Length: 237
Ligand code: CA
Image (cartoon, rainbow, N blue to C red; front, top):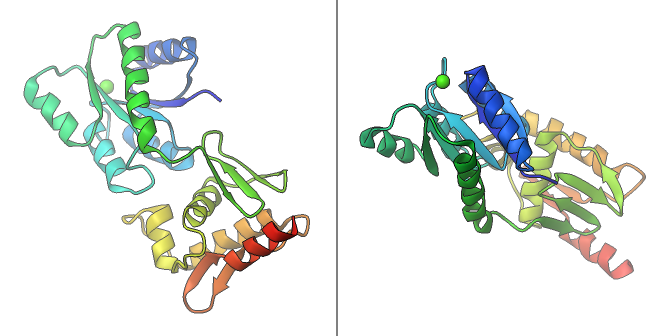
């Protein structure tokens, strides 16, 4: 699976040039034409890197970068800022907002692709292992594929993040508020019963075909992965 780069650029010529060069370098490229579209797109599918134009209509590149850094789910996504501004003060402001690197327009496509690769390489050790497993469930964090007992599961992006969070901390009980913070982000307003809706969807996907329920509902507290069940499944297999 090729790394996925989201290009956030309002100038179609530059966006297409970037897409062409990234794809030619064997990367998958997506496009958002403004900051708001970028934030929606990133919430739907987490990119391996964001190429972020500074001057965008509406929400600026700097603001997009700040918002990504504020949310737990997007905090570690590498960001390269693209800009026509080359002054030192702007460079500092860009990096202060949380960007990992900074490329000034006009740039050579070859150099840009090299910077993309370098930033992704640096980011990789900080990211988690490529697979998570619990009982008979395996999550591939690179391809976003999830399997249970060898059967592929179809999870929406929210269910994927929810399962990932639970699988990163098996056995630990999370309240609905803690799950909201971790999965949706602290500054997103979502009602806590939304968590129940997504847990229900996640359970339905996990339990299809009659597999035992690995999610434990802890009365008046929240949810956890059922560790006792994992032990039982492990010893019976
Ligand atoms: Ca622009």
